[in-house]
Structure formats: C-alpha cells, structure tokens
Length: 219
Ligand SMILES: *Cc1c(COP(=O)(O)O)cnc(C)c1O
Image 1: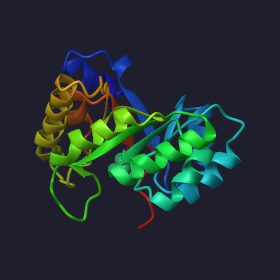
Image 2: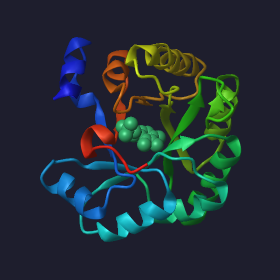
Image 3: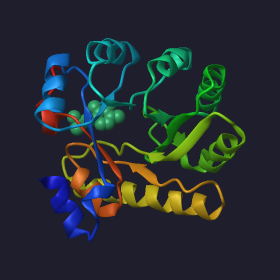
Image 4: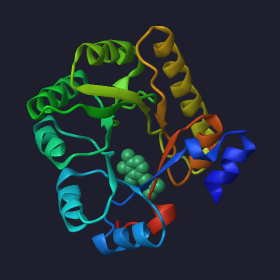
C-alpha cells in the first residue's frame, strides 16, 4: 500500500501512521463496506449534521470517528454529545474554551488537535502560527481538553512537492512548542489524497484521505 511505501522510504514504522478515511458525502453503506471489507477503523467527517446521521446509522460498528472540518462554536455542544475520538480542527482559543466548557459539563476530556494556518490565507481556517503558543498555553490551563498535536491543510497544489515546506513548518512549530514545555504534541495530522506521501516523508502521524479511497465527491 502507498502509506507503507512512503513510510519505508523515509525509514518510518508504518504502524505509527493512522489512516483517517474521510467520508464526507459518502453514504453510510459505503462506510460500512470500508469498515467490514476494507478493514478501516478511523473515519473523518467535516460537518456535524452529516456526522450525526452517519454515526447513528453505523452505531453498531466500533468506529473511531474524527471531526476534521471547521467547527462553529455553537455546534461544539452537539459535537461533544456525538463523541468524536479526536477533533482535528480547533482553530481559535474561543472554540477551545467552548469545547473545554462542554467537556467539563459532561465530565469528559476531549482530545483535540490545533489547526494551524501556515499559508496566511484569510480564507483558510486555523490559528496563525504567531498565536499558536498562546492557544497551547490556554489549553494547558483548561482541564477538559487534551491537545494531542497539530493539524494543517496546505493550499491545494497539483504538485505535492509544493506542500512539503508546509509540512516541514508544522514539524518545526511542534518541536518549538515541545521545547517550550507546551506538551508532547505527538500527533501530526497532515496529508490528503494528493500529498499524503510527502506528508508521511515529513513526519505525519495521521493522514486524512477521502477521494483516493472512495473516489471523487459530487461537486
Ligand atoms: C475533504 C477533506 C480531506 C480529504 O480530502 P481528499 O482530497 O479527498 O483526500 C482531508 N481533510 C479535510 C479537512 C477535508 O475537509
């Protein structure tokens, strides 16, 4: 498989890389099939309402659901109720504190990643890199969120090599935050269908792959 190939090329153990199969727009039946026949266990959704429906339809399967899309603050409570293994897309201190509050109310600790906007594009979600340490500091004071690492989405490029500097930068920021005592941040969620091999070469521990598994989505 291509994940194993990329891991081997970069001298990494493929076991340390989690494939999150992105199922937005994919009907529950196809997700079930991917679980039963494809052996996939982690699935990612980017909208709360769509996730809600699929999680209900597939509640009999032992799926690890990941939330990977932009989460509006007013949907945080519902996302917490649904119970995601990991929320990849915490893109502001405000959202982080809201998740902490909701998790506290439920008596749980929610695993999250901080999404970093490395391109500076204002159309993209994510914490600007200058603000990352501040958000990580706030997370350490919050009692009911556990920041397990960082996530990024580079600008789309046909040529995957153009994503490489963004992946390197995320690793650097992680290392810097680690040195500052802001957590181990062992998870790096980076790489999609078009660039996951490059992301693995640079240190990704989670790749989020949709179209390369399920085919292209309706426009
Ligand atoms: C849709 C999506 C993916 C998967 O994209 P593909 O190009 O289909 O692999 C990964 N991450 C996020 C945040 C997404 O919204």
